Image 1 (tube, rainbow, N blue to C red):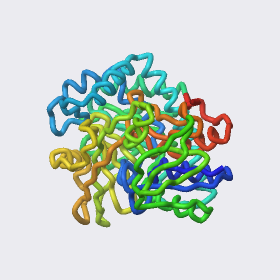
Image 2: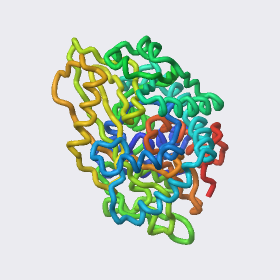
Image 3: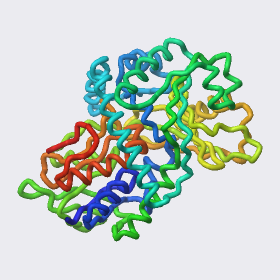
Length: 413
């Protein structure tokens, strides 16, 4: 079957890889000059099954109100008239009940475990390089109430197969000694030994090269204008002023997905959540973490990528604005200095902001739409890197008429 994949981020490229592995003739289209240059470019670097607790949880509404108006807040909703955000926000609130949170954790863990396994198999088969580390992910807490809530979430994850183990403050330091400066503030943590970290951008570009070697074709520098439909099917994509045709079409365009689908009458609950990152080059004498750390109170993650430290996090709901807010950039550096005062940068940090495609439940949309030859692989929120391989493998199964291995509510049209 001829398949056209729209989007060359980590989700689009993994989709292309698994579709090609299944024997399909695959073409990838993207507006950028290469793969992995938007949402996948400089994210937090974590393969984090342990990050399965969705943003929509019973604590979220109170936190969002408390942080309202703070430019450096971990979660910032900017007051503005935006019907799409209003509709998305109402659905988000419906997902904040304890029952919905537990169900969403279950589904995210199932897909994330499958995806991590797919990544490990891909790595073993191809020896793909991307500064990966297999040293686990450590969540730390400095607030007792927040730690108590995390203990409950970790228990739910363990029920569904994610070994997120609750540990003491001293155990946190034994795992990552560079946190010694904040020992008086630490109240505890969680550690998931099987989680990993790595550079999603480097992975995406190297996997795109492997795809090309397998015969996948790429149309870069090709803006995707619209989907052409007739007789209840997609008959082509207008991209770069040309009509590109295939038997099946996969939309993996992150936050651009709802904009492309809307003219067809397909409305998907994806809204952009802007995340920030700083990539800090490290000098040889830097005392920097080697275990990937998540500071849950500040919603910031720290991942070692070779001789770089990636600091990423926060969420800002402000439409499709990609501009850098200096206050939010500085908040990343300030927290880094508080946690790791002996860090020795080898140069200036490189700041970046990208738009995460967030659904109200944090569950991505994977599978067939009501248009029989149109498929989605989008809406992964903060977990695009974590869920990419499993999502691509599942998408290839669904397109081929097979049932994916992961127990997840895939779209069936």
